[in-house]
Length: 231
Image 1: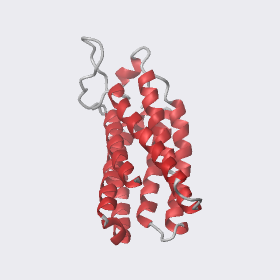
Image 2 (image 1 turned 60 degrees about the vertical axis):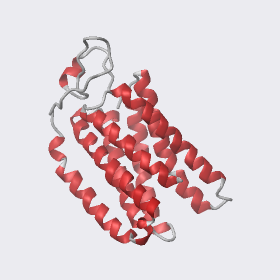
Image 3 (image 1 turned 30 degrees about the vertical axis):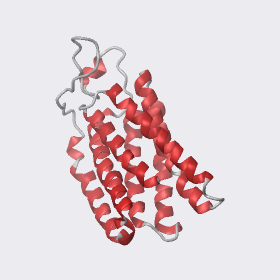
């Protein structure tokens, strides 16, 4: 059941990443955040209620709430046009928790799962970037964060979900751990040039007639009265 949810986490990370890159209008990303957020709250709740008191199962399921609450929070913020500072500081909490869950996958769970240990570390970096952009308002990192989110959606969610669903993950977990670790490190380094004021093509926004959409994080958007910085 968690594997199915992971697949759709990949979808929402890609959409949110494209939003930060300026290719998806913010409010149009809200519904998917709400759908996936609800799924990622219902899934761990079901797993915990059916765990029969198994503390290891409950511990493993507890981490899913971190993402369920994140996506619900993002969806509500986007629809309501709220400031993103709260999401940013919640993301700092998620980043720290993700490091703990990474350690659990490496050293605590039996059998260990180094593949998900590597995945949780990448999620820790990504949520730390959300904190930098939204909590600390360092918008120079917006493009970089968006690109990392797209990579995370593919490499740490969609692909592992399909591998889990087909049974390939358990058969080659150590190999996938190495592959994921290498890809994650390379992506973080290769995408560094995106930490600029580069402006992508503006998407067609669902706004008032004649309104020209402004890429998120650009100087023009910052000058627009009442513009929201919510991601």
